[in-house]
Length: 114
Image (cartoon, rainbow, N blue to C red):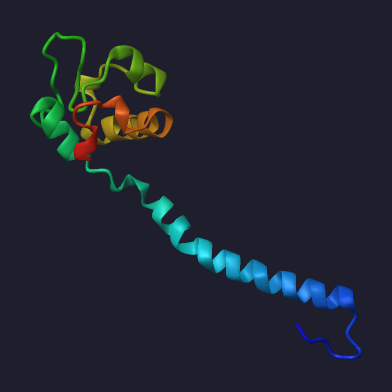
């Protein structure tokens, strides 16, 4: 870090900090981009495992929909009505909230399929 004779130490430190900030921001860019595509989870594969891909599943065992939600989990994470009556997209929206809170372990058998 060479400084010109007329450049103050504070200015040199500021310039160096700005350079390091830029390097840090560029290094973090791929992480931010991958976080934005966190919805890369294959919910169809999980539904195939959980309910044979039947997004309207309701077998009376207390779990409903393609991703086999309990009513309490469905409601706690913003689902309305019945999971079995909800669209695939609605079920995935709720599932992403569940996964963000509980991880894929919320689907202990099939979560690893996603």
